[in-house]
Length: 133
Image (cartoon, rainbow, N blue to C red; front, side, top):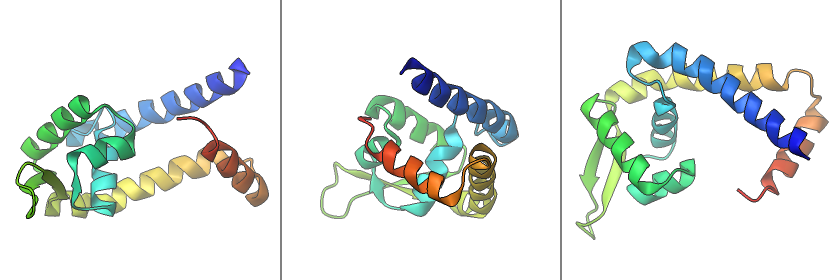
């Protein structure tokens, strides 16, 4: 059983290492690019929703969003009904970078899953959905 967890961990670290090097010149190392992908795909999430979607604690997520705001990738806006809630939106800079980020994510998936048939990929997706994460 440990082999499964170790294999998932190794795949994750491998992808993270390459992505951190790839996006470091843009200030998006340490997996910051993932925040942009989620925010472009689901603009207007409140900070807690973004943290939950990334499965990252809210304090870390808030600090990361603040950094991305300073870098000009994200902006925070008050919710219209509840001023205590901040919603996260991508800037034009993030939207323009999104195709490159999406392509990178697709290429990483293609490399990782290249030895699996379509049926095996579907099976893997179903099994991973069952994990208690």
